Length: 373
Image 1 (cartoon, one colour):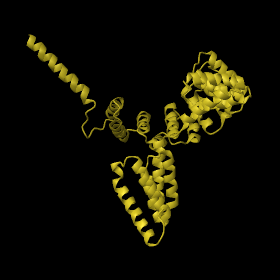
Image 2 (spheres, rainbow, N blue to C red):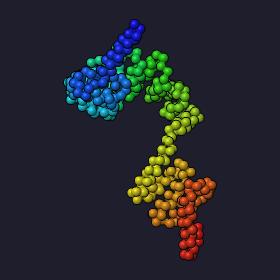
Image 3 (cartoon, helix red, strand yellow):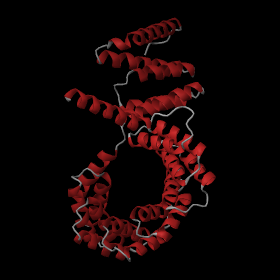
Image 4 (cartoon, rainbow, N blue to C red):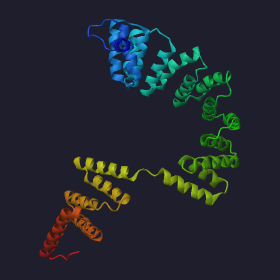
């Protein structure tokens, strides 16, 4: 009896497992679009987008439905194929005005850096449902990126006429007020945001700018001080504005320190700068623009005087320009710099070349009756 029960349970488990896996393991000649779609959904849930895409395509080749098109278009979007996602919608369900389609197309145009196209679709969504917070924010941002704050405010005000307590919407609305030159409206709204419990450095920063726009410099300074404290003095833009406003109201010593700290934070990556100058120098050499290449090497040495081989390269280029005097000067600078650095092994071959050139030049000068420099 016990053996029979075990066999029955084993049989049922086998049947269950087969039933579960058979949904996603199809024969190659299957024509059931639903099964391909379900398999695509399963892969999508697991984040296997390429396999998901393949199954959605198979499903669509068998049967055209909005559900499959939405899934496939979203998959294209997630994999970075933004134009394909748009074209898919325009091919199969061009007249569809569902929010999922409009939102996906708008997001694709955002990625393609075409805010003017994205806002066309977001305006339709807003007409259908202004309470869609994500869409209203994205639409306003599209308008702001195109320097149309008045249009952004039109939709933000429609939203706040229904819900005036949404902090994310209010922050963007206050920013739009400033962009539209409505600084007093911005101040009132930022104060309301602050009273709602907002403790973001950005709120204090933009409130400070709003006060500065209205020449209320003391109030602007107080806000910027709070913003600076909230950002732990790590935001260069807050520090720079604090320095500028502080200077205007007589906080000279504090202003100097704030400006210095801002400049320190704004300094570019020296390694990147050097790498770019080296690349530019190489390009100039290939174009036989030797003077421009030398100028790049000079800038590299100012950024990092330890780049001793730049002296060697400069000497070499003066040789290309047939300026032996300058060529000798830089070879001598290179030799002296290497000696002071303890003659690092990596410069051995260049050092031998430079010393050999100087010896030849001195010998030539001797036979010409010239005094060695």
